Length: 147
Image 1: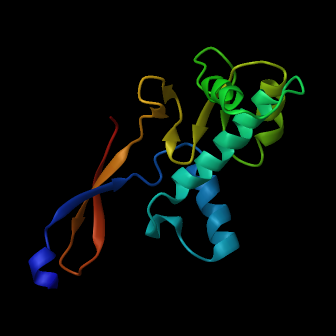
Image 2: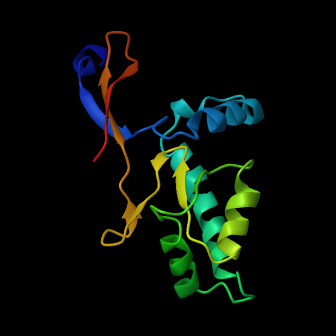
């Protein structure tokens, strides 16, 4: 069937689209001995976990409970165009969470790309890749598309 799919195109969430990706990839390979490029949504899942933790830091800033509405406020506080910018990761966690706990809004960039939320869509717009199956049966990224 390889000959039947050679030349076929498809799409997937983009890997390596964010400024924090190189650090994420190096640490992932060191920890798991696997390349996150071989999987879909790996960097997106990493970013999602950090976004929830950062939103929780904002939501609990005054000793408040972690409720849905307060976490929602925290997510909104992660898309400031005028606040300080942070790349998600363990080296920025302390400063980013402290800024949020102090009531500031910040801007974050993740391993999967920019994490500015589209409030109408309820999520950030995420880059995707167009891939093609080559003669050897491997997937090759043809280009990245930023929506």
